[in-house]
Amino acid sequence: MYSRAYKSAVTLPPVAWVTLFLLCAYVILFAHSFWSVRDGQIVRDFTLGNYKQIASSPLYLQVLFRSMKIAGAVTLFALLLGYPVAYYLSFNSRHKNLLFQLVIVPLWVSYLVRAYAWKTILGSDGVLNTSLQFLHFTHEPVSALLYSPFAVVLTLTHIYTPFAFLPIFAALEHIPRNLIEASHDLGGTPLQTFWRVILPLSLPGVVAGATFAFVLSLGDFLAPILVGGPSGIMISNIVVSLFGAAYDWPLGAAISLCMLILVVGLLFATERLEKRFSYQ
Amino acid sequence: MNASLLRIREIRKRFGTREVLRGISLEVAEGELLTVLGESGSGKTTLLRLIAGFEQADSGEILMSGERIDELPSYKRPVNTVFQQYALFPHMNVKENVAYGLRVTGVASSEATQRADQALAQVKMTEFASSSPTKLSGGQQQRVALARALVNRPKLLLLDEPLSALDANLRRQMQSELKSLQREVGISFVFVTHDQDEAMALSDRIALLRDGLLEQIASPSEIYNRPATAYCAAFIGKTNLVRAEVKAGQVSAGALRWRAAQQDGLVLFSIRPESIRVAGGAAQNGYVRFVARITQQMFQGPTRVVSLECGDGTRLEARLRGDTELATQSEFEFDAADAVAVKETA
Image (cartoon, one colour):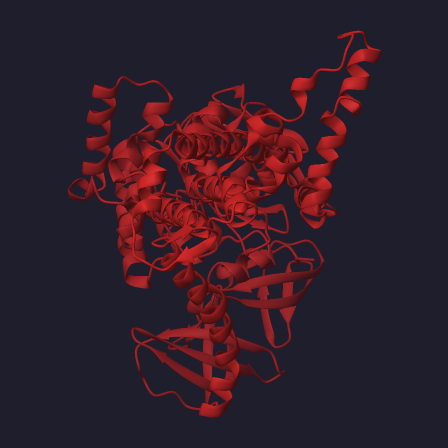
């Protein structure tokens, strides 16, 4: 067996890494959320002021609510796009590998490039507006395309659909094919087979994919900066500005912790849901 | 034989470059239990999947009660299947599994419930109605799969090696239950297996498949006693294959000689080990006597298998009753009528 020294040599670095950059960071964050700022200085006295401020300020709740709406919309669209693609790939095995790579390939491209691409497409001199004017659908650029919640949802959907697709595809691949044959054999039409056999058995994948899409887009702050405009601001942008320009770390920490609790709660709930839907 | 229910005509199926079925024709009668027997790769499962509609034949026809079904999708065919791995829906309980076929075909839910209960009672699984199929043993899952397939009252039930996953004792028990269930419901069964004993025990007729061709289709006793080919004779039961020269009705294989109504030339004969016995008393008419050396004896309960070597080197196996001591050199005999001429197998 491995010696004690070898074992600790192998395990120590990652443990140290997690402790230092994750656990310690959370502790610092946690502590800050109960402190306050006065005259540009952090006051290390216990207070619930930050949390009270969050609960009583319509701005933060409104942005948080909007972030959840955007994340929810992204999740919905990612599932609506990801599920049919996963279904097609899983059940039409002709070019499975090639098509699978095509779905995955956007993940190799930098997030920034993909977000900028949408900026180029949606902008007032962008590809979409120029084409619309060329085809005489409008006479002047449609400015609502860019710098709107719509643009954020569109960009995030593009970026996170592969994350929804992957677990759905995996779940579909795990459905024993003889179950589908059994359904047909017993008189189930393809549509009935989908609703009664395939969809229920792929639900763990759908839940996992939805969780990925929702959690990742809820915490996103780059897409709102690049394509969101003032009306597309999300909660992470507020945290960024509180830690940056506003220099209110305690309030930023409190909002971050609220988000963290929200997300962790969500993960617990979806994990239980996944277990409930799986039968293996 | 009753009226024919299923008729398969010249079915061919190719997967890539491999021709899995090379022109199969057969009929299944009303109420018949036909076993499709063959080694793995013989095409037996493919044949079943073509009847069920999970695969499409390249050419040929499948007719049921005179109407073509090979162009129908599987969900419109009046057949149901018991799958090898049972294929029970893991997200439904036992009763929901059984009622599935009724629900999707639009049977009223009160009737569906009643029929599902009835089917579960038929396979003695009533007490498990609300269990999850994943919690059941192999034998229990097997019964549920059977109930689920029978509840739609198909004209024909297809069974794809349904007992292969069960242990030997349970398999024998299920064989006898299957057979009585088939008599009870009175529908035709097409039963795929690679186990020749199972085929012999269950079938009204056996269709023996080899490399995508039908080797022989006959009742178990006929296929055993009158095998058409050397392959049949060797696959079903054990046999001695003896190559003999026939000239004007006189058969000679080494030291063995007898008379048979065969065309002149080289002929292969199958002699079952149990048709060879120890010679005693005066030679009877039509019996072939020979002296052989015993090279090995294997005791098998009621019988023993004795390996013999004739003076000219011909090796034979004999299955003898009783346990009388035999001299190393003894005289044996068999009825010339038990030597069955079989076709050579390529």
